[in-house]
Length: 243
Image (cartoon, rainbow, N blue to C red; front, side):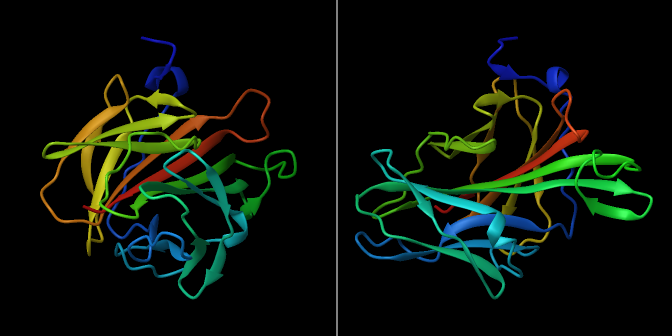
């Protein structure tokens, strides 16, 4: 297998099952993207997509937008009732990439419950882990055409629209993530549907059968780097597509 691939055997990845009643996180514009005007971008979190039920920790959110020409702009995230929001003013026509990363830090499971910090501060920790959440969506000043470019996140799903469906490729630090289970969630659903696991190129294809918006989600876990004060890294990502 090519060294450019992140294999299941090499990093000990397993895809976490997304069960009924789970909460999902996504990022999307509140409406059509208006050129030259301030647009509200929303980060939702809840169990009935696309209705947001609570705000995630805005202080941990690093949000951004990438213009059609590749210019990257930092967005300021702020919590409001039931969601996190940011403002973005596009100065170029075309399709823009929206995304965020939320590093939720390191936590430990101890006999006294879940505590912040790794094994360096929680000597009685049974297990310690770092948790990272990411999300990507696309918005256009005209007709939507999702580009097949990665946003450079630790963990992300990159789409490529094709006739009758969308080809999805999952990346971990820029390398194709193999054997990761991808789920899809349609509007109004509480339970996601498993599409299957990514192939040797980190890809899987979804055949469209419903109008958008649609949310694709994936989770993976890998061992922590040698010498870390935690045991594993838990990653989750979502891709919002509206067609």
